[in-house]
Image 1 (cartoon, rainbow, N blue to C red):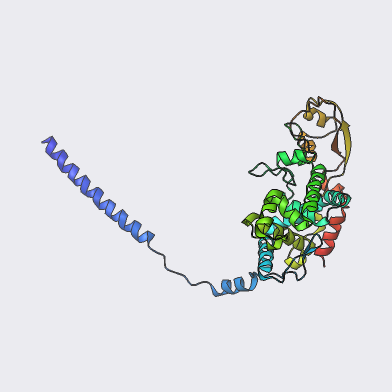
Image 2: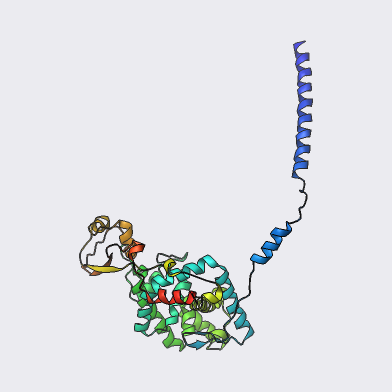
Length: 338
């Protein structure tokens, strides 16, 4: 008797569960059905059409790179430059950071380019390489603002080891980049090809010039990265030299600046850079941010080499205490106000 009653109860419950499941499934079906389409609010649509606009961009008629003319009269050259202008203009956050970091680092880079006899336009190559993120490291291992591989850095005079890596030293890496670029210019007789070789390597450029029987970058069919590389540099140059034309308005107070520093010479071991920093009233982070080429928390310096370590002047990190004096920052401010 008990078993028969249990069986009846089980059938009742099973039927109830099936009914509930059916109702739930029906509700889920009706809920997931396509919602009724709503017409856009005319006032919102009108506001959107009035306020949101995307424009094609002016392509410069006589662009140059490092004093060499860009053959903009060719349709494919114009299209290539237009592409890079569009990408770098409408990637607004990145280009704003270009402008801000350029104000900080170009005053360090420009005098070295001039002293080394390398055209000033190559400062834009550093932006294209690393966005002037000083600690930048590529997936392949290229490092610093000029993105040197370890072997190339050694070849052009940079010290690279676990404690000191001068690829992260803005001034020394710039001088090394100049040596590479001048060597390439001597080989090719063209600064444009020297720039391409910086990206792809001299041997690759030489092979392609021989294979395609030309001596001109703009005649070469190259891989996607190198084919766009010089055009990207030219586009960055065009935008940073004419920011307002491309819609960028940056106030001088919003530009980044290089903190005023003095140097301390060290010709012996440093057992602990945290303690070293405290001796100058600094944090470990502040010391390393000013000297990113110091890669460890100590320095063995078994050879007694003299290193110049930057120390900030008093109040250097306090923005309100700093008077922006960089020539580039002033010029950028004037351009954005025109």
